[in-house]
Length: 209
Image (cartoon, rainbow, N blue to C red; front, top):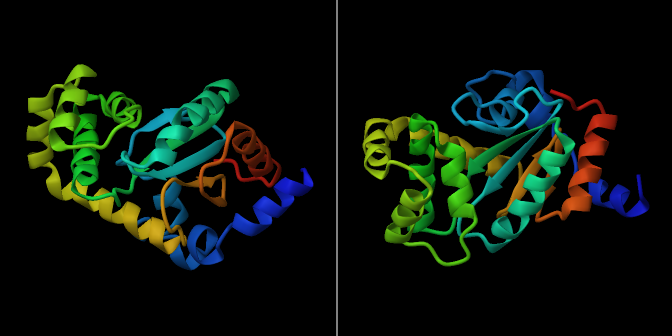
């Protein structure tokens, strides 16, 4: 590990006993339990579902740094081949972000969560409800069905967003993007090199699964 990386990990790292590894908080119903953070069954997974390292990203579709880091992270996940990537919507940029987060989560009911996510995170402009709708339709999402699924499952979708928010705040994150890599807590927007190093460090520390 480089000296720079040692400082980075020491500054931003690590396992908070009260959040990620305490047996006292191991109940799956606890939003800050390890199971809830790393393996929420209500959130689809990108990358390798059986991968040995999990990356959790807390993001907002309107966050410019989230947009910037997204293609680099996707490339790292593809090249590694053994990383589970979990996207946790944390819509802190206002109403359009909440609307986008809800519809993206609703798209999972038609098997298109990842397509919806990729379409919206690839934008480079301020969102509106109309822009979200048009973007999702262009990405092949059945918008009418997504809206119907949102209404039918609003309580479950809003519960996911509430859990994500509680986790992000409980983990001490102050903005987006923010990451859990293995059991390391990583605020900010790492580049590809930093992602690769953090993954390697998580493996070396035995943070698999």
